Length: 274
Image 1 (tube, rainbow, N blue to C red):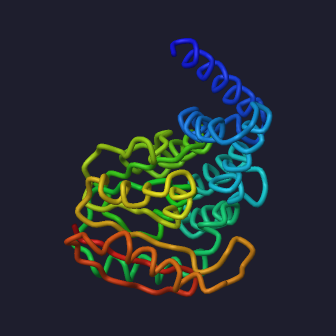
Image 2 (image 1 turned 120 degrees about the vertical axis):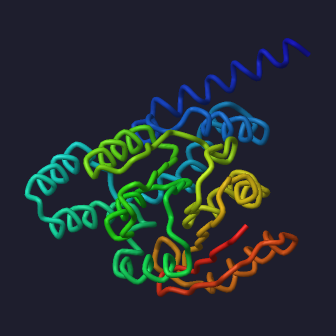
């Protein structure tokens, strides 16, 4: 049995190292690759097939959301120049331009003011936020009109993205930090008043069917803003609102939570009060 376990570990190490050598996935959190790699090793006939299927799964849950390769160095320089100009309008424009490069935030760009105005009108004053599987969502902070004392904690699986977001938050004088984390395996322990879980539950459930509910239960926040996309990445509707509303109902039907439904042009949102 020990020999079997040793062989499995060696095989998993091979899968992880092979995936990390790929330019597309070299910055992905090791824990996520290990988790998916172990699943694929149990399904596939050999290591080569497991490597390929692991990359395919990573593309589905993360890589597909980038229309092109991020240029974090260029973007930081633009953000610094905008901040130096002291023009809030220019700074917001640069943030919006960057958010075009991630499909989740790209779809929301035309409704940013309406999106946060409606959500925060239903909440008390918020002083602490956790942003789970955040993508480029922290770049929306200038539209949230948060108090200066707010603490903001963001988590995602890309190491280079997290470095960029920490630079952005420091530049924008936001208290808090961004951290690399596979939230399906380890939900942030930090206690906050509000959590954002935007367009991520379908991705979680591609890794583990029970992950959506597990994440919602584990987040230590009074309020959760949970959203689902209204369109595919290709822009098609395919009855997605009805499908995701039904899925969210399944996840929460046994929970004693207060739930408010908000519908936007590009997104279906549920505000949970635990």
